[in-house]
Image 1 (cartoon, rainbow, N blue to C red):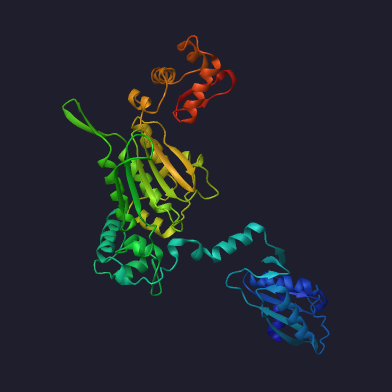
Image 2: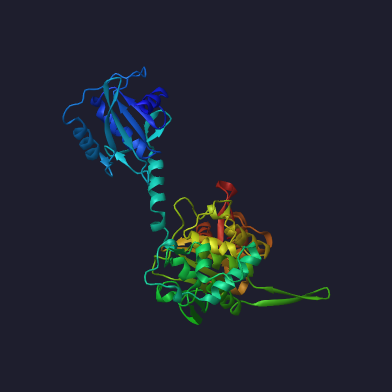
Length: 454
């Protein structure tokens, strides 16, 4: 009784609520839910606002009825401890509520929380975030348990190789004699005795035994359409090796130019290798592994396309990729491991580096597109006359392209001067066709409209 008096004397708080009567049962149930969704607490029924005990009438079924009301109107059902105590000869009802592990208790179908001395309704965003937090391990594919996988499915050599690289790149503090299990635990890739999907994708002896879709398909096509193969390879193995395999395939099928600058021989790839490496890394790290498709690299005469399974998170657009944006990892465990060996920087700058690499290399800005449920990064060559002719451009359009090459842009008036005697409608269709083919983009408005290479 002394402890209860002392508690009452302290007044209402984040963990204590007073009610005059059990007749205020709806507010009592809301507070039960609020305490469950906060840090727990006690409701004392029979205490007046003046902090003096007023007492409450307790009938034969008072506690039973109150218990049933709480059970019927909370979801999941809350089972508080309800007791009848006496203070100065008067009865009070004490409801002790424990903190819910996930803070997702509803009262009358609505979420409540405790803020200071008040019980308030949660916002929609707050409640949704709590749901996401509860199910995050289920939501992230890479953190789920890989059914049937054991340590025998892990390549010790690949784990050791990774640890050496992480120690060098990020100064990972690991002892030389660390066991494979300990290493995977350090990387959060094992839960209890069970391996995560990320463990198999990163270090599996044969990840495709568990995930057929985890392959990298590479193709060099003849011309500019995906019709006839010149070469095609499918790479299995883990996603770390696939990154290197994909880059080597690209280097086999793009040109390496050499020129003499001063007394030195300088070699330059047809495309910026670092930008290609970044795009492949992003595709493997951020793809949706629940989609049955594969990451693909498609090489054409005029471009390279890198396809990743899955669209961007809803909070990002393809335009966002061209500027500063947050880092949103679809596969956090894979992303963290890639970060530890400096495959990614985890700051949302990868696409910016791809753009910068292309521009520094003298190529057009790369395109980012969402096509058929995939995010596609498209790296393009500077258009040569031969490449433009292969795209099926007519003589007038070739003149326009040559003008853009010399002047960096072309206006409608420029095009009319180049093509005397041709109707404005025909010339308009010519330029629109170049836009549709993504060779040029339309800039400006009204009389200030002009066209430049895309």
